[in-house]
Structure formats: structure tokens, C-alpha cells
Length: 431
Ligand code: KE4
Image 1 (cartoon, rainbow, N blue to C red):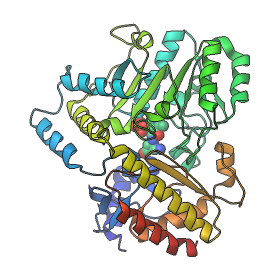
Image 2 (cartoon, protein in one colour):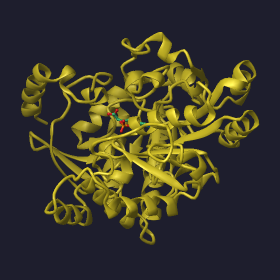
Image 3 (cartoon, helix red, strand yellow):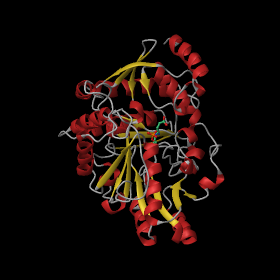
Image 4 (cartoon, helix red, strand yellow):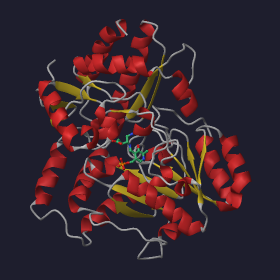
């Protein structure tokens, strides 16, 4: 496989852009090698600038639940763009996407669109602080909620991938009110409330910790967090930027019958264009300007093209059978990974939920990863790096980090799964 053109463009990019990328995890730093410069995508596939073709399980880190360049999304955007790209004024499209999200996630009564998941979580926490009049927040080690200053504390995703300390440039005063606890440990959260009960505004949690790999919540854990919030007058915020419309059509909150005060969304609701949203109970959301005093704004918030792509994506995803078919394909892939690894005695921890999955190569046969500490202790990142490149060489593109999740689309079918598993059988022999 030649990567001459990617090497050329990566060298050029590194002179123009820090690290040659506009988001750190794309740089292949934890797996080594040259990031592939992508020329185009179609369905389950992407092609790089050297003409190499890959089955894509990153799917832009989650948004492309219908695969690349889905005809219905492309057609909707082609119509929309002839009317302009942005007005800075309300459009019916925003009402339509708001209504669709509200109908699909029953905990939500009102929604505010922003331009990224980072904006969504940052705004959700400002809202929680404004609504409760309290300052402290609780997040979980290894969970990633975007790069807002107050959340870059024991973060996951690229921070974990690159082994970055809590980022420089974030004043201690900014994170002084950010408390952290291990994921899947209710006692630790109970203790934080006992220490600071009257000043904790909110808990924010990824319902599946998919920025430290893929860690499922223990039974009752998420409801337990919400119960602690109710007990102590704090708000329960579910960061469903990744899990929304992926773990179930109505997100993790639908799968586990949860009723968060605030939900953060992104990725799928933009269909690959820049969108985020924070949403929740009417009484809380009415605190947001101009209805209420909490300020948050955005030039391109509710952008008509992004709304169009999100509407086309979700409307297609909610067609009868579409989501379930993707979920079945995801399960087949996960089962294939586990079976193939077991056949050659490679210790793995595999999990899937709806249309997303994750797997760890384990340093020890009987290790179990339940939180960030065990992920760092037991995840064999070196073996994952060898796996990643061996699969890339065979035309299969997984996340360039052990601490990320995988995603499947409606365009991944039996051919893609069989090809992936066959490649794995060869690769696992030499891992
Ligand atoms: P963005 O600001 O990147 O749109 O969203 C931040 C965010 C918030 N919450 C969760 C649960 C997230 O997973 C993310 C972003 N996810 C990463 C991938 N794990 C984005 C990839 C990247 O940083 O390039």
C-alpha cells in the first residue's frame, strides 16, 4: 500500500497546522505512522489521496450513521445550498429538527442548537450553574466532554490517547470547581456529595464511557447517579453527543429508561455537518437567554445546511428497520472480533450497544476494564497499534487509538463484515 501522497500532504500540513491536523486524535500519534489524507467517502468506504480504499469504522467519529454521501442527505443539501448557506435569523428547519429530537428523546422538552459537542456541554454546565446557583460539577475520570477549560480534567479521547496531563493553559481557578470520580463507582460520588453537597450544580456523564475505549455502565449505575442528584438538589446531565441516536434511536436514555434533566447532543444530529445541542426540561431551558438570564450565543447556531443534513439523516434512520439492521450488523462485527481473538487466545474485552462498539486488547487474560484506571492498567495499546496498522494495510480503518469507539452505518453489510473478519483472522495470527 503506497502512502506517498498522504506523506507529502502530512509534511505540508505540519508546516501549516499544529501537528498537521485540526483535531489531535487524527494525527495517529498513539499508533504511529502517517495519517491518511482522505479524498472522498461513499457508503461504508473512504478513499485516501493515494487511491487506497478502506472500510470505515470511524465514520467521522460517529455522525455518519447512514455512511458517507448518503443520496438522501446529498440531495437535501443540494436543494438547501441553492437558497444560501446562512441567514443569522430563525428558520423553519430549526423548528423541524427541534421537534424531531424532542419526539425521539422523551426527557427533552426544549432544545438549543450550537455548533459542536464542546459548545453543548460547556453551555449545559453553565445552565446547570445558573439554574441551581451552585458552582461545583462532577465528571468522571477518562470521560471526555469536549475541550472546554473546566472539563479538561482527567479527560478521555485525545487527552487520554496522547497521555496529556490536564492541559496547560487552563487556570487552576477554572478547574477548582470540577470534581472527579471513577466511572462505575457510586460510593465515590456519594462521598463527593457529602463533602460539597450544597454546592454541586450537576453531574455530567457519558452513559457509555466511549472516550476511554468502550466501558459499559454497571447495572443501576446511571439511575444511581440521577438518584444522588435528586437527593442533593443537583442536575443530572447525560452527555449523549456520541450515544445519541447510536445506542438506541432515543439514545442511552431510551435504552436504560432514564430521565436526565439536561442532555447534550452532537454528531448524528448534524449528519456530518457542525452541530451540537443542549436540551432538557422546559423549566430549566427557560433560563437560557433571551428567555432567561443565562447567556449563550452562536453566529452559525442552527445553520440551515447543518439542520438539513441532520433532518435527512435522522428521518432516514428512524424509518422502520433501519436502526435495527445497523445494530444487528454491529453485533455481528463485535461477535466476530471476540470469536476471532478467542480462536488464537488473544485476550480481548469486547462490547457493543446499538450501532457502536469497542474492544480492548488486554495485557492479562482475566482482566476486566470498568473505569479509566483499569483501562490504563490493562489496555494493551502497543498491540492495538500493531492491529490498527495491520488492518489499515488490509483496507480496514478503525480508530487510530485504543481509547476510542467504533461505529457502523446502514451501508455496512455482510460483505464489509466478512471482509473485516477475514482480515482479522490473518492479522490476529501475527499479533
Ligand atoms: P466536539 O466538540 O468534538 O463536537 O464534541 C465533543 C464531545 C463531547 N462529548 C462526547 C461524549 C464526545 O465523544 C465528544 C467528542 N468525541 C471525540 C471522539 N471521541 C471527537 C473526535 C475528536 O476530538 O477529533
